[in-house]
Length: 431
Figure 1 (cartoon, rainbow, N blue to C red):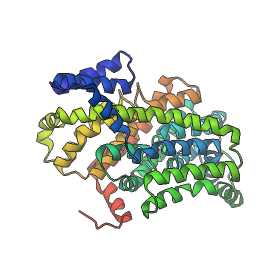
Figure 2 (figure 1 turned 30 degrees about the vertical axis):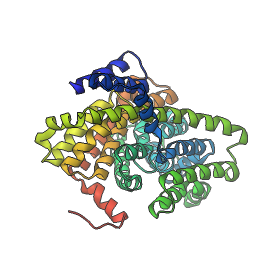
Figure 3 (figure 1 turned 135 degrees about the horizontal axis):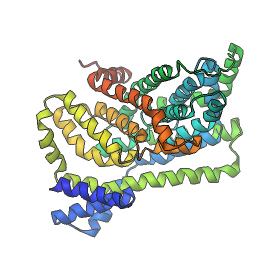
């Protein structure tokens, strides 16, 4: 009965147009009323507790780093470097989008920001070269969702806090799966573009490639500072986020000189708006997460999935299918906040490594950014590329399928996640 009340109150509130954050609060109040423990002070306290975490300070700074990177010219130089390397290939602009998406994912961790920046730069070039624009927009959207997987990742920060899992370890474990997502897009793009007649860019000589590398060196080494400081214990994820924002601001303002002082207000304001949305969701999830535990919803779900607890692979498949279904109706952050307290007890009971589960969970939620009707990244690329949602859904389908294949490949072969992670962390291998 508690599961029914949880779902009906949450989905019912969203169905009538209540914002997700307020729907989470309504859901919590409904559960409290059913359990006979309603207290307005508890509601207020749990909402405050939901956002009262030092680690969560990484979110506004990573968002600010992404905004500064776009305004300061770092994103454009990354694209120019990729263009010089592979822009002359058949379908080269598509490969440029993938390479640039992987590099930019290691800088900001925001799928929406990366997608908007790539689409604004590449879509006009693709349109001029005769590319299928819905297909190209779908590729850029699929590349954008690599951002929550390759560190620094806002999604890993949110999951790490909600699940009480090491965020630096999640960051390290996400590197190889994120690259695999990019490689799957390379294969899918080669497949869909092989029969198209496309204009190609002139081949750049090594002198031009070296020039674009020198021009973009300050953008390209940014991940080294951020990830290196976390890996070697020089900075926590929160401190690394501050370093990233400071670095992007200094490079954009004093080295590339594209970020003007008068732009700082609008950049900070944009980051603050996005931060307020994310943090209010995190705070509102505090009450529902606490009540999920009080109402023993994980226990009730565990009874349903009990036949699968002895088979980790089947249990992971069942949980990932659940996340895919929920991800079609909810945005990234609400899905993470709602399902983490529900699924983590099952993960621990089945003996699944929380780091491994966290990586696949975030990949699945990132894929949810591409699934209609909610898919926020689809909406972003529709607006920037000026194409209809139905056309973008058609265009993104082969790339969505490719990334789902990567997800299930990682379920079948967990070593693809855990072996590189343990090697990078200097831990012994476990078979």
